[in-house]
Image (cartoon, rainbow, N blue to C red):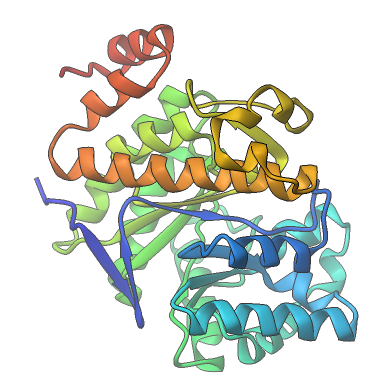
Length: 324
């Protein structure tokens, strides 16, 4: 079996894996894009994700402020991952107003460390046609900005994902490939098995290629998918919910009052929203650091046993045949 490296290099960025990118989005969130990036910068997060769509559709003043904040974070050593924006275009019903050319403008103007390619969410059914589309899009995006590595996103049916990912890796020579979590199956265990299949297919290419899961921010899911073979994740849970540090479970954002004593932020005279976001970010930083330590020591299952609620761990142990 191919060993997972401790670090992966993408362009000029070196990431300790597994890694979680808190996502910044205008969809189903309470604050502005600038406010979220400001909190992430103030918390000195080593990495985060922004949407090209949200930057593009901000007014001129806000757009400049957001890009200045991204540049500031990059200059301070943060890895800034830019998303294609197709998630936001779907929810804002602006798919016809968000074209690859618009994405290319943001790609050329934004100081991101690397970026996801302009993805096709309804790809062709035939295998070779699907591969050709992604390979061509990846080249088109990469030609716009040679300094910013482009990571393709693969949408498709679960049963085809492993073959698609391996073929695209062979065709492009990329160091990371991305798959939306929702494409992996319906339940957590079906999805974990799909991740394992993709990991096996990627390893069969003869080199280690990082696997990113889009839309994954539940702490327990992060650990399960890491053990299955995923390396990198992004999600909105950090700004849509509040995490209980003791159980690693998520609650409604308004329930933060129940957990404010778990971090130093609860005793500070800080507004409710930034206080709760800081509470969440502190958890994710510690969770991913511990998970990385355990995984690279060959003790990933032990991490889950120690940190999952007992009932959840017991079910995982049976379903995934975990052994400490």
